Length: 488
Image 1 (cartoon, one colour):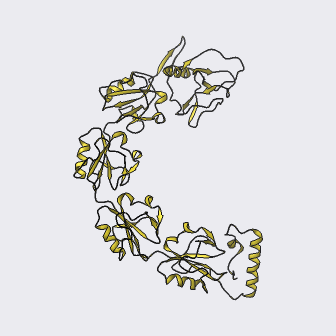
Image 2 (cartoon, rainbow, N blue to C red):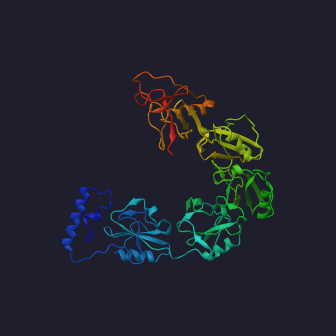
Image 3 (spheres, rainbow, N blue to C red):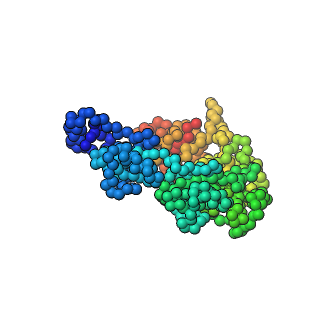
């Protein structure tokens, strides 16, 4: 073996070489250097190639050659690869005088799944083919969308250009796969013309995707999700609803105030309309050919002093501070109802039904939205409720309701969640119990036993009785939860 330019540090690249083996290998190197000091070994990849992976990393098997294929030198191994257009990389093991050739599909780091001594793998750039104008490569060489897509199994193409031409002639085609080795061509529809759809391997096939220019969303609308992404079902229209064009589908959506987005499938001439609650990418849970989904802006917005909470249609289940079916003549009317109730932290207005729900402060956060309510918009107060004034004989103190921590403190603990702090003002503590009275909270001024440990400041027990610790020792207590507020 000849290792004349390899140092101990270089040989240690192979993580599975232990100290004893490394010492033995170094000894062999030294012996070789003593016997052949006039030989210079170049174990760098030749011009036009670049090293793939680490020394010793191996694509298992022999690839395009027979087992034990011989090569007299690195240059000989390279020449064998150069002569085979299928060869994307070669592996040369000088110690054994052997050479393996990998096809294009296995000429990347991810295909190296074994070890082969101190073999060097050299990869050449894929210059045999590149995607034509108007197309761009999708995924890596050999990545495959399983099946044949829009053509029959074994569909032939005489060249890359022939495969492209087949795709160009079919308006359903979003990408093509050309396997030069086999002279075969697969066509993918628009729904499968993305890297996420590539779930297999096909030799050294090249996949080329074209830009989706056949249709685009009209003015006033924006594309929602990828081509083919679908909100399952037909939404506001009957199954199989027809549309003669993209503009026709848009017009159907424009005529229905409940419609927040439309899906147009040109191939089938069909049109689905989604309500506002399903007009977001998170609602797209299926596939529908190469349909395009267009979303329009929600023109209703929260009034001054409020900001939108969650997405359109997100709902805190129940009616909160009002009776079921509470009416509101407008968004402003719903807001006014919230303004009049200091317990109200947010309101939900459903224009379609003319109904209004009011949420208390504890449920005025996106984490409390656990349902859907048509195209309702939820508006949260941007600041705390109007101040409540408490008068004593000597001073007048203004107490404001704090913004509760989204997550409660833990039982038997004196710690507040991240981003929150203790409520140490006992007047704030009493006000909180009053605000939360509808949820069964109450406040007690009863004194504690001297020396009894209680959480810092405001806390509650299992019965939602709220108390405030002024002078007792502070710490976690069994059956007690600290009440925390968001750090402002």
